[in-house]
Image (tube, rainbow, N blue to C red; front, side):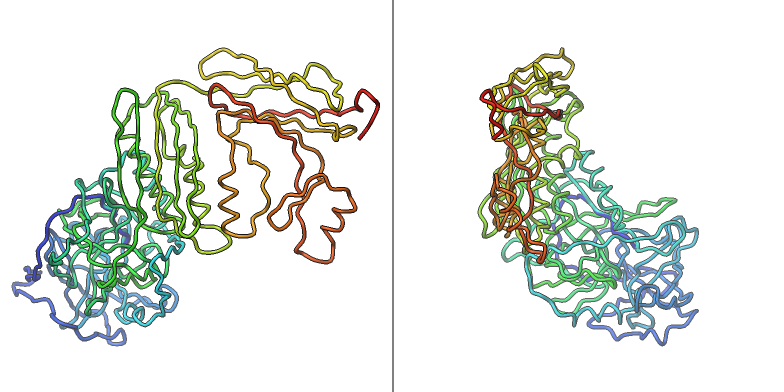
Length: 588
């Protein structure tokens, strides 16, 4: 079953011992204690009756009756699934709900497996159970012991009437509507459903504080954001042995080896739905680390503590004191930029939620482990407030994603900070056209380049920019490009290392600049992290031999001039001119 991601508040929880609740029969079953024996998949037959355990409300697991329907062989590669039908009034009404992922199923006191799959829009409370043998196999998988594991994720497939992982409810709090929409879109492929649960939650356990008792059937979560904003995916514990926990019965992201905080949870209630019902739950206290995210479930280690990435957002708006928001987000190549964007968007929306014209400046600082810091700035204009998608185009968040996914070596971003300054003004102009005073351009001339701009909701105006035509361009066709500095990358060599990759990111032009570039056919080279301009053809042939692959790359030589603008600029325009000989008749 998919996970439900709850953004919720933290509630104090004391050690508890699960008490049996009435099931379909009048007997009062007790949950197996200690390490239960295994009910082998080979012995599973249709008609067998057993008990599944999950939390219906609060923190104590309760049993409900299930009956084996069949066994589906090779449901996923090298793994069978056991079909069961719930026979309990509480489940017959709601069906198999999001958040039940991992609920253990026992036959005669022996552990058969974990509820993990269900059908959307099903009229019958049928579930797919992952055999416990498949889950136990994850204990022996070799680990890299990397506390900063940042694996990628593998989307789930399948819709409609297929047997799908029970969706995981993502309990969230402190996020704006825009951030919720962003997370919903990004997490949909993984069967994770963000929903508001209210309050804070998922705090770290204080020194000397007793942890909640964790047992099969109790609520367990994977925390993605904590602090002023919270997000935790909630499921159910299947098996506990010492510091090792198995849960969910299916993957969360399919990331392999990971390092996510693991938290206990409280279930408020079941929310029935015609599509898929779900548990409304909140995270409570961090108790360990999720270390494996595999097809048969997740594995947690109670003796470890995950390292998250701190995020700090400082927002200044007209007539208001600066507000500071602090959160920590999970480390993951694909997920971390989206989580940071959700935090930053929510901080801005909380400070200034008005849907109106905004000019926003973002000064970002990324601290890269072992590489120092990268400082970047963005100037963004939005006529309708700041949406998460606009924010994702910001240079700071793009740099975060690029560093985490760089082609050179694993990278860890120790910290992300951003200062946000908001002004309520329509302060932006679009480049509409460029023109020269005549058709003839001579090498060495200084030309008055006319740039026509149109401000938002304003009248067009013209900026005249003096542009010098270098003498070396005589006799060549030259492209003249006029663009916002935000759209132009400075000439940088192809990086040869992560350090060079990061150095290239630190080279940029601001949006409050107009950049004029004069480009010619290739006559320069980029070699081993350096730019070599203005090379004769014989030198280029030497640097780019045809008998090997590691050679110099072409780049287009550009004479580039940067002019400050009184406001942020968007857009680009270009024209092509033929440069004639200079006044003395010289071609070069």
